[in-house]
Image 1 (cartoon, rainbow, N blue to C red):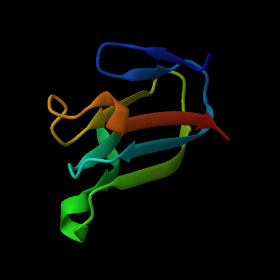
Image 2: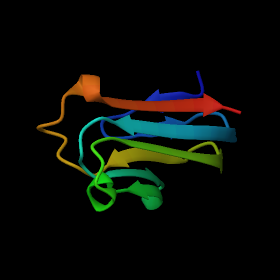
Image 3: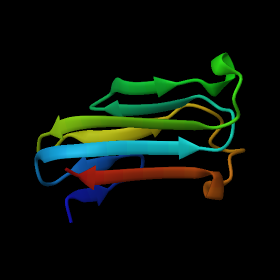
Image 4: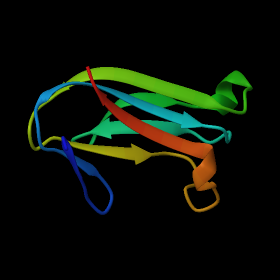
Length: 88
C-alpha cells in the first residue's frame, strides 16, 4: 500500500515514480494536483469532445499529496470518472 486515502486527497506513503491517470466521460474540465500545484489540466469543451484522458508521470516523495479537481463533481456520475495511480 503506497498511498493513504484522506478526505479530499491521497497521501504518498512510499516515494518513487508514479503514473497518475484520470479519465472522464463527461465534458467537464479535469485537473490533477500534487501538493496544491496543477500538474495536469484538460478541458474537453475547448477541443469539442465529450471525454478526456489525462496522464502524467512524476516522482513523488513520502508525504506528497494528490488531489483531483475540476468540473462539476456533484452532477458527475462515479461510473463516468476513473482515477488511477500506478507505480512505474
